[in-house]
Length: 77
Image 1 (cartoon, rainbow, N blue to C red):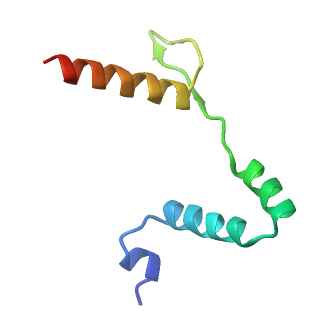
Image 2: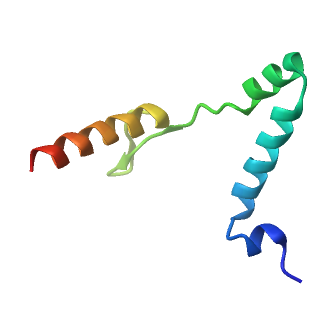
């Protein structure tokens, strides 16, 4: 037996994210807002070089900066 999420080509983590979003959206307004706030993430990462941790950066900001840089370099060539 194949799980439906696997047959649909989803990873288990993606399946859980979709299910959580559906449940949050089905809640009444007050409860929905509280649940959405709990669902937000603030991920950080740091690049390690020569055994030392670099400056911690927020993932969302780093992704946005990389997208801007990619768009700028792609548009000028």
